[in-house]
Length: 143
Image (cartoon, rainbow, N blue to C red; front, side):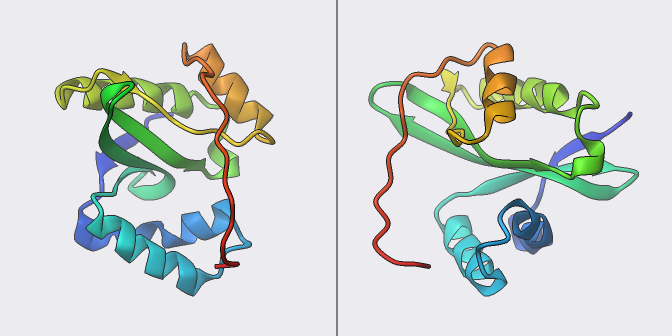
């Protein structure tokens, strides 16, 4: 299966909203829209995964610097439509992410993966990522 990976222009990022809604149906669509606008202003980027010019997957990316890891690429909210999973797209995406990180002078790629997402954990471990911590959260509002 031949897919293409491209950074989506910031002014066109609203095209990812339907896939974000599929990723987490518990978040109201208007909240997703509002948060996306705020994220773009904070430097958020998104890789579009295309098959026959159709958007079939997304991978948000942040280029960050933290004291313990240095400059790094942080992918988040990786989502591939169910009918396109288990076809090697994730492995290709991982290679694309590595090239992007290197081109930006990053020292690492770092990400979060939900504890309940065992397939995701297995994928990242199989692709030479190491679990180095546990991500904690304290919710202050519902949305």
